[in-house]
Image 1 (cartoon, helix red, strand yellow):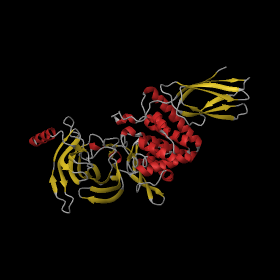
Image 2 (cartoon, helix red, strand yellow; image 1 turned 90 degrees about the vertical axis):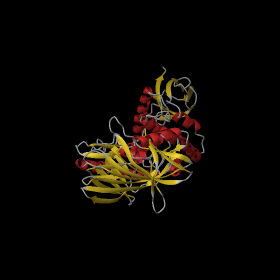
Image 3 (cartoon, helix red, strand yellow; image 1 turned 180 degrees about the vertical axis):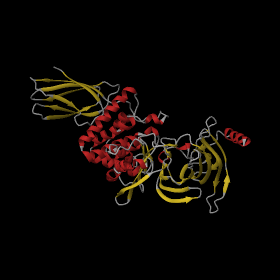
Image 4 (spheres, helix red, strand yellow; image 1 turned 30 degrees about the vertical axis):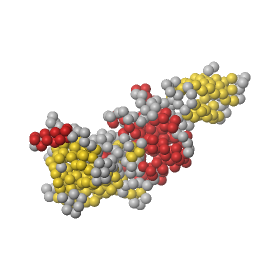
Length: 537
């Protein structure tokens, strides 16, 4: 073994200038065996892949075995399987280190091969093996953002999507949930059970998932008579959990109507050990153990995670630097759902709370929404990505109007469902649908850090019957935007004015027969900004 490792290390070092690429994975077939004796998993993976260009070797991601703590995966066999009817297996030279597998297999462009990898170990991360809040043993995948490779051999990047099949062998007292449709459940010797789930829609690894626990399972109903809505909760939380998670039956039809068809064959909402409040795993959403209250106070969170089934899961950001295309969209579409259900005042309430979070965050860190420099992707889970991303969509809607905004959203989804997109792709769609040049809009709101910070002064001249004032943008670079001002008069009528703001200083002058009671800035909550306003006596 030592000689083999030396040989492979020499091979890959000596040929360091050879071309080594990630393949395009087409399908994963994972068989994973779990047990109650220890945390070791036994895995058998068959991966169908192709290449977009010629290469001397390919690489895949898999957590390496760590000498200091024994965590990680150890490969026991790696072969390639011929695609003919015989399915002959042949050994491959490989090197597994630093969470990567380098496989020496020269391939031409568009070659398709099947790789078979057997491995075992205790996951360092990604598959959380622990006890739930009631002290019962559980196994929950938690792959986001790029933690799937700690237990799945894969290309652990949102840009690569593949169909998959999970074959889970576990003690027979557990129920198993995963992406897709359950194809088989078979009792095995030694009190074990095989459960097979299959997902035909290609997924990124960040939203591939299994959950293995003692569950209570409820069919909440069907949407459009064909999409089953399930709730999977701990038996102890059955009554409250079934009630809370059944909200999905109301939420899903709104998104289908607004965005487009739901791509999957089921929707399951699952109580889990995820570290996040909610995690948008494709058609199998995981929520934290704290999510169940029994009063449906988690409605916005459930709406957020369901929105991800379109944005993040189907239309996926091409890299985590464009994460707002997932999280900003889910944030705003949850607001759209609540606006449709509860009215405009609910939308204004949510926008105001979001704006406060954005302004507070900007005082601590100045960074643009599109952040391609951060490599610790957990740090991208911040108000810039979520709330500011949502606000950008709101301002697009306010600037272009409901009809154009709706058309552009649907067009964007049609074009990129099943694929990946960058912010430039979204901009191109909105410009095409609206017929407008949106370069400045996208540049200032997404590629530039901060937001407009306004200092406004005004006064009333009774002789001239004029309200005059000055608007200063005090941040470093001036933004360009329309600003609504509303004069509040004695008769409680409001006189609305819209000013084009595009320089550091803007003056205004409005006719007024009497002194206004007040001057309101952005009365309809259309603009992301902060301001101070002072009347001059």
